[in-house]
Length: 252
Image (tube, rainbow, N blue to C red; front, side, top):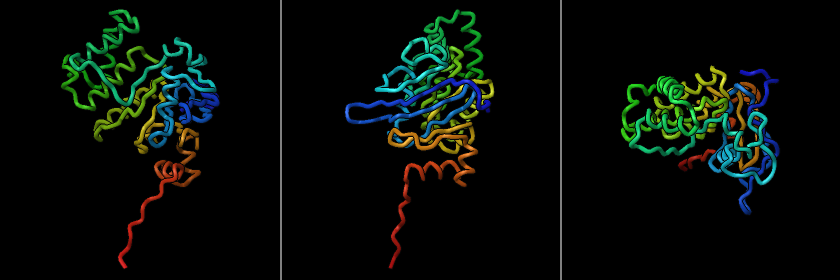
């Protein structure tokens, strides 16, 4: 885990995003340090994806500020150092993994020789070498998610933003994606991701933030939160969002 004094890869200050009468994000402050894995948690509609969309430049904040490596997210150059995997991916399924990665390499202007080397490295990382020339339409959901991770890494980004990277995967698929994230973290990459798999977050993340109704409720090191609340991350999450388990009626 990076030292507390490490420079911020991502900094959000008083971030607010409103859509007419609906406030999706309400004055959030966040710092993600370079080299750490940070989990953004919350129930559906909490504001996680909206926060990510502001960071990615897809939508503009209503007020507040956001910076990536010290550059305002409203500047296109801020996105040169990031890779992104959306929750719902769509690729031209007649392409192979190799063809898809070559397409993205051209978008980033990566020279052919360098792109060939990078594609080989990434296909090995995501364990898709045997299927590199097979059409993506023949891939399982887990394989498609891993090729998505590979495309997010084609430009060798310093920061990865992953929106529900294990959504819809079986246990083996989740484990493989988790292993890839751990390897990237070990390489010094900064990773910001949202997930509903709280056990996974507890295993991989250095720190987490829990958002509810657009507001930041809790932020801190996973180990500190577990010790402070004397509960695992799942129980902490359920308490914060106000989940009350239904009690079955008893027979008279």
